[in-house]
Amino acid sequence: MLIGSYGNAASSIQAPSPMNYLAVLLRAGDRWSYQPPAEHTVLWTAVGKGSILVPNELQQGELVAFTTSSAVLEFEAQSDAEFVLGSAVPHNYDLILGSHSVHSTTEALHRAEARISEIQMRLVQEGKV
Image (tube, rainbow, N blue to C red; front, side, top):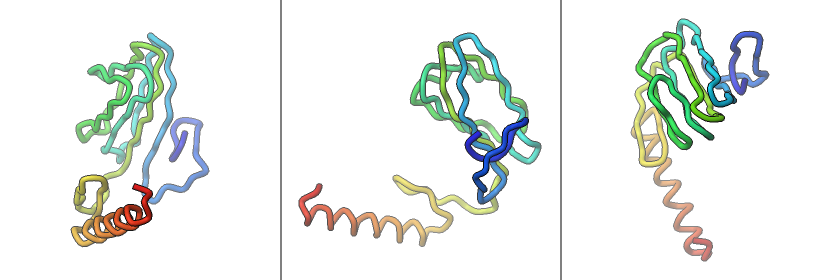
């Protein structure tokens, strides 16, 4: 358990909003299910090693966001697999997507992009890039 609580496991890290973030290891052929808390309708997973069925196959390096739901997710390891799984309560903010980041306002996105440009110019001037 990285963040949140599930079953008998609980993290000492305080999340800014209700969420769970789990690291899961399965051996080839193992099955595991995750029942998110009722309010956790935002769910995602990313595979770090191996491949899993959930219900479609996901392989190492793939990330998927599931359809909004609080239904049980069923995982089956096609090979020895390591993946992370997250679930959360939806937040009330719009998401403004940048090329490398996500923000809650257009202004915040523009400030972040300007800061990144400043850092890039400084690194170029210093010969580090």
